[in-house]
Amino acid sequence: MALLLREALGDSLRRTRVAQSRTLREVSNTARVSLGYLSEVERGRKEASSELLAAICDALAVPLADVMSDVSESLSESTLAARREDADKVALTEDASPRIAGETRVVIPAPARALAAA
Image 1 (cartoon, rainbow, N blue to C red):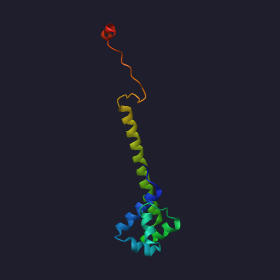
Image 2: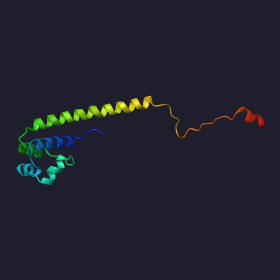
Image 3: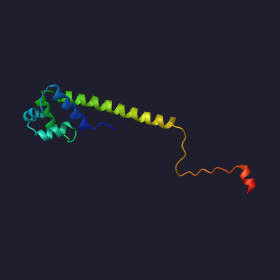
């Protein structure tokens, strides 16, 4: 499954905050956003507006462009991984032994001697 934009943004913001050894409370106070909402943004559960993203980035002292660049890399890697998974699934399907569909009826003729005795 491909990574969503809000999940990639949240991951990037959380990594940045943790790398700075800062708490959610510190960043939420500085950014003037509720602790719960910031937590939801970091977990990829809420879509952050551009104003909110700018406030969070200011609170983390990181340019929004750097965060977006990180997000772009994450989304590219996620897309490549999803494509590899799809290719692997196709390869497995092609390599699999032939299967008979469940609704197909297979009729096996009786041995010739059984027919002669009848």
